[in-house]
Length: 597
Ligand code: FEO
Image (tube, rainbow, N blue to C red; front, side, top):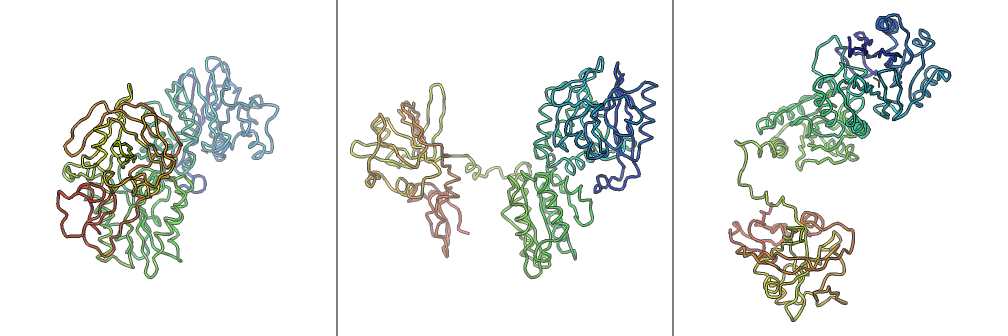
């Protein structure tokens, strides 16, 4: 095989291998690639596995056409590539070995010698001229051993990528590249996403027209496709929309639940459902699927007060490869004390950015109405986005979408000429930057709206995550017309406009001067310029979501029927909430209430 006028392929195919690296099934064999660059000087790029010494040396001799190589470049010391270094040196004693410092240490460990008298040690940025061709060495530590270097030939614009962009499968078998390259990547390199990202960044600065890996085919067309997949894989992104269900089943009941879930997911518009039986299917294939899709369901039985062994092995594979950025659903089965969900969740604890579904399916031996309903709920939860995307299933009038707008929480202070006042507001945003303008929306029912309309000034105090619920009790839920919200405050501090600002629980405040007023029926919008601005701390701003999850006490709905205000926790008891109902505490409307469940 010819890569360019000067670069020839001298690798070998292995169809007698049982398990690659002692663990991976390779039904279509394996290729150990090696290349030779023929210029004024001749460089051989890596050797091959120990079982192919003579085939490789014959290939090399044929490509050399009677000439002798000057260099053996060793990019990677794993024995599938390095096993014939000594045989090469015996055949070509005048050649020099070119490799990284760590690789020479490994040579000493593997072969008892580090070729001190015939070697060149190279590192990131070093070059080696062969004549027309100049080899540029690129360090690629942990892709996937620490000594790895890649080599860029700037003449033919070829990247020799070591194990990067490799795949399972011999070169004389035609098969899809991505399937076996993905299984190879996540099996062998998966843990080192950050290191692969670092190499991809270096590669982005090179004009690459051909990639010559140490396994799998030479890539010389549509390189963007391969680089994009490597970028997704190494950044733990979602390659394919869909859901993988990985399960074990002892007597078939868990399998039945998985089949039912798969059916429901498909009915809910899930574009691809990949189901894998961890006891029977290829484990490496299951691992690649787990990384390929954005959502995964793990279903297993409780076993020895833990989980079934194949599921334990599977989760271990995920965890040690840095599994992250996924949505995870759990199905557990147990005949007397189900513990599988808790065990699985515990095993995944150290993984970053996993979102567990609200629904966990609990099967007590076999499916019943309750566990079937849980499977329905899990399918609904996992397919929320698929349903919303599809025309046929989308709810196009789901106003809870408005709750997804992110808000901060602020205390807006003002003064009516008699006393200081303040209220909680979440509708504040900067609307222009040159000049800086800030829009503040306030409900007309609030006394502050009246005061600010009269005075034309206010201070916006940005609450930090340190603010306790007492701040919300003080400034929300009651009117400054009737109470003095600062009566218990000592040593009030004021900005240049004379208005009070909070001395704690805020990270910043700004003084605003009203420029325009927009009447929005129930609310008024004040568009203001900034006259003063100070930062008090680096603590994060309190968001509405943070308040809901961490600050607001849980409403006392126990034993009550009706609706609860999501803003302040006010409970409305009754069968129907009137559409025009306004919360007597926080003044939010019926849309901010939810039924007590
Ligand atoms: Fe192909 Fe890491 O050896």
